[in-house]
Image (spheres, rainbow, N blue to C red):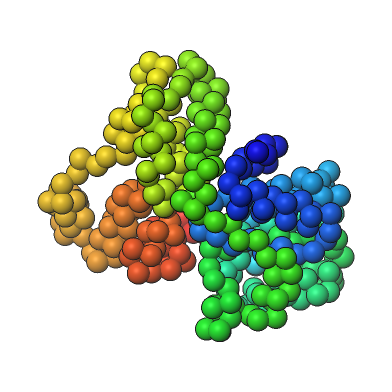
Length: 322
């Protein structure tokens, strides 16, 4: 059995089919849902499915990645701001809570929200109203909150990194999305779906997989989960010649020809000078991201840092102010 809909949910595995059933049941309510799982497993797709099946489906679905926006900008993005509230606020602006009014607000990577904003979020959920930065009056809200994280929030609560009251407020209905390596029945249907999707998107000839591709896909660990599989198929569609996708098309374009010596040389030198430690760290993190095919959670884990540090180290100051 498979399920395919606008939200691009494709499932054959019993575990994922069970998740779909839970999502269908919870969609009719206004209960808050906390979706957990590794990066790239499809947490946002589950959130979109819940919204698409809900009575709010004709209203806005507003997603925000809490780890992708610098902390100093996140408050104004969420709550909006009044004209003159801070330097550069030449006009008033509605926040994402107001944009989602009547619909659904999806807070991705909620575990990366700092304690100050956690307290403000809790107040919004309790009072169902929001106050823009720089204003003194509240605006009523009618929204549904869906949240997601790759963190173990129960452990974060024990370590005082996440508010217990907010955790219980969000975790009314928990949904845990398993990694792709634990739902192997979904790998080949997803691969076929992505093959068709990207052949159409890139105006390619109709392509098909060689006979040995299936066993290769099933033997791969897919630490980047569905996102890694999707990126792998798209690269193969774009770079392959002919109408057959081979194992070399899938594997060859991911290989790295950079020797350790050349990596070290690139990390240490630039334009005839030695790099600073900060520059060198940024170069190494970018190299680690390349090796891990962009999987930020795995890269942060490999390097022994958290995702916020990874984000901060890979973005220059002027990029954060943009």
